[in-house]
Length: 128
Image 1 (cartoon, helix red, strand yellow):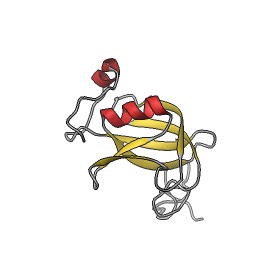
Image 2 (cartoon, rainbow, N blue to C red; image 1 turned 135 degrees about the vertical axis):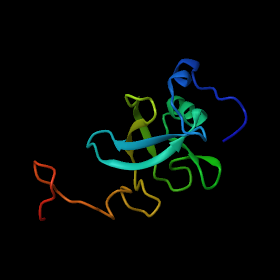
Image 3 (cartoon, one colour; image 1 turned 45 degrees about the vertical axis):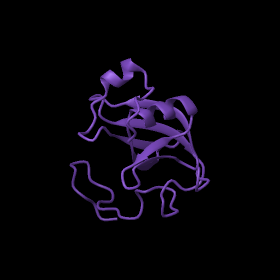
């Protein structure tokens, strides 16, 4: 994260509950189908850029730099809405995903390693 002050609206910034490293998890969800696409991380500046540009901007913890989804891959996330959860510690970004959301080339990051499929009304797993 940069050391320069963020341009995020002060009222929004005051509400956020960040991790010790100043980040919030940001869930990207397809706006019209509800499909969960990916999880990224945002600091105040990434959130500001997302809110003002209409494109998802994330903070890369491994590269230690901002990245705008689609700039290198061509797989854009066009922002439709942004919401905070009830604790103000997670951001939900509803997007129109163009192409793959996952760095592996898959549509979503959550379809390759399913730990539990289906489920009964009592919360127990069912055979599928």
